[in-house]
Image (cartoon, rainbow, N blue to C red):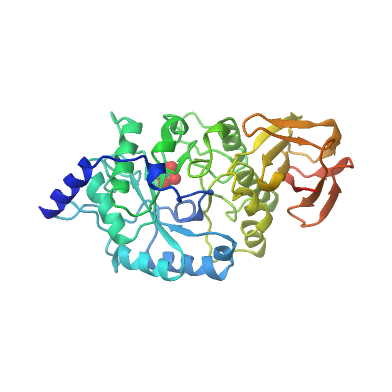
Length: 402
Ligand code: GLA
C-alpha cells in the first residue's frame, strides 16, 4: 500500500525531460559489455561475475569500458506476489542486488534488460503496466543502465511507452542510462533525445559482414548493412543521445580485418561500444582490437559528432569525423571483396561538414597523420597518401592540426 502511495506521488510530480534531469549521463557513447551476443539466455551469477573480473584483468576497464549489462533471461518466469520483478533463483541465487554490489565493488557499473511489452523477447515478464514499480526495483538494486526492448507490444505506441519508462526512471532520482531498443521501427532518432540516451537504429546485428536476408526467416543484419542504416542519421546523435547500431561482434569469430573494420566504423559512427564476446577467453588480437586507445578516443571524443561518409569510390569509402581541438579522424573503408589501392591527395579535397560547420582543408591547415592501427606516422597532409587496403579492412588515421 505504502509503495503504491509513493509511486502515485511520484507520477504526479511535474517532470523535466530525461536529458535535462540527467545532464551528465552518457556524454560520450556508453562503453561496456552485454551478455546477449554470446550467451543468449544462458546467463547466471557466476558467469557474469567472471566476465566482470575479466573486464578488469584484460585491461578493458582501463580502456574505458564500464557497464556490465545482463540481457534477456535473468528473470524468473513470473513476478512475485506483490507483482515485483524477481530474478531466476537458480541462475542468480543471491539476487540481482548482490550481483550489482559485486560489479560496483570492481569500480564498474551494472546494467539490466527488460521490455516495453507484456513479455520480453524470450517470454519473461515484460514491463508494460509496471513501469513505476519496476523503476523503483531497479534503483533499489543499484542498476545504472536499462536496455528496454520492443517485443509483445501489439497496439502500444513506442514513443508513449518509452516515455512512460523514462519518467519512471527519472523519479527514482538514480542516474540510469536508458537504452531504447525498438529496432528503429518507429524512428526513435526523431523523438528519442528527450526520452533516453541511446536508441537502436536497426534490427539485431549478426556475425557477418553482409548477411543475406531470408524472406522466410528472421535474419540478423551484417556489419556493412547496419553502417548503411546509421550513416544518414548523424544529425540526431550528440552528447547524451546516441544512435545505437547494436552491440559489437568483435571476438565472435569474424576474421581480424572485419573485427578491425567493425570496431573502427563503430568509433567513426560515435556508437556505443558494448562488447558482446566472452571476455574470459579472448585472443590477444581480440583484446588489441577492443582496447585500441586511439580508436576508442575517436569514439569518445567530447564533441560527440557522428562521422560523415564523405566519398564513395567503387566500394572504397572515405569517412571523416570532426574531433576536439580542430583535429579529425579519417577512415578509409574497403567494402570490396578484393584489396583496393588508395591514392588520396589531401589538397584536392575541401571537406565541409555542414552539420558541425567544420572544414578539413589541407590547403589552409597542415595536419600530421597517425595510423591508429599500426600507431605509426603516415606523414602529413602535404603529401599524397598512397596505400593498399585489404578487403573488408580500413586505414584509419588521426589528423592532428599543426
Ligand atoms: C531483441 C534485441 C536483442 C536482445 C534480444 C533478447 O532481439 O534486439 O538485442 O536483447 O531481444 O531477447
